Image (cartoon, rainbow, N blue to C red; front, side, top):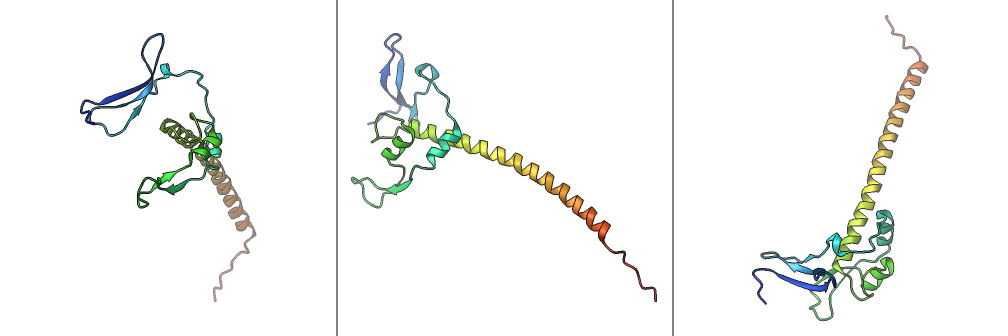
Length: 154
């Protein structure tokens, strides 16, 4: 197949407008599919908690493997669809992982990690301030309790 001007696969059309509601596009000169992700093509939008997604993702085993139809030297990495589906309940079945779902889980988990890092940075800064104050107090106490050193003038 040759599609030097790009190609589009539409798998869903609005019954009222006739516009695409699902599909992918390979733009001219591109080497990766673009998934339709327009807000206007979506419904039942619910926000997610990145930390909850991160916690769920931590339970999903990630393995390397090859397809039975491929030479064993050709390796891939990723979760099994059954584990991914059990953890997130996403997609159309437990035998496939949609790239849009894998990307969404990854982005939500990154946001969860970012929240944790920001909180830890705040905690570290507070602990550093507390430690500096304690070190100053200790130094002052050590100065007060040090015996005076007398110099021998002989």
